[in-house]
Every structure is written in structure tokens, then in C-alpha cells.
Image (cartoon, rainbow, N blue to C red; front, side, top):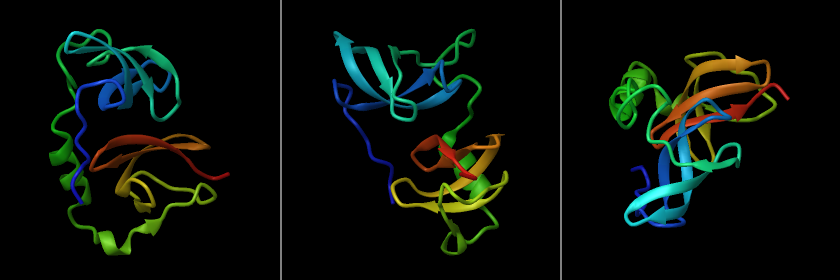
Length: 133
């Protein structure tokens, strides 16, 4: 399954720093000036804010993030995606768990944020999901 590509236009999807989630996540473009997105809303927490290509204080798009496709493939190496756990917000997960999400596909848990949130890296990007509810 290939990641969905989006056009740089209002309604399109772009990666942006979310100050509320404190990470680079998929956002929907709300407004543009010329060919540059200026206003977005986070597809994870739904907050609206200015477009930020990277974490504040770092330079360039996805600064320090490395290559997402390479990291995704590295994290999945040695595991069998067909044996991935089916994601449920009721289950609890640990870092390194491979799961199958109905919308995002196969992902790897990269961090447990707190007792109710996990960060999961999917082929299309990182998502913050609930668990243990």
C-alpha cells in the first residue's frame, strides 16, 4: 500500500509541526499565500495553527527526523506484518509492538506517551493514538 500523495492546495494533506501534539504530524491545509501553506489544522488533535515545516528551533523540513520511509522499514524489519495485532483503543501497547490499524494500515509503536496515548509510525507518517481505555 503506497502513501496517499496530496496536492499543495487547500484541503490537501501536508506534514507540519503541531505545537499541541509536540511532533510533526499530518495536517490539512486551510489557507495558502501563493504556493505556500500558511494555515493548517492537525488531523490528530484538530487544533488550528500556522504551518510549520519543522520543530521550532530547528531548521529545514523534518529537521532531525531522518528518512521516514527508511525508519519505517527498519522498524518493521524482522517482524511479520501479517501477524500484527489488530488495533483497539481498549488494548494496551508497548514500544516496538506492530499493529494493524483499520485506516492507517500496519504501524510500529515508537513511544508510549502516557497511560492513554501511544505514538505509532505508519508508512504515511507518525500518529498519536489512544490505548488502554
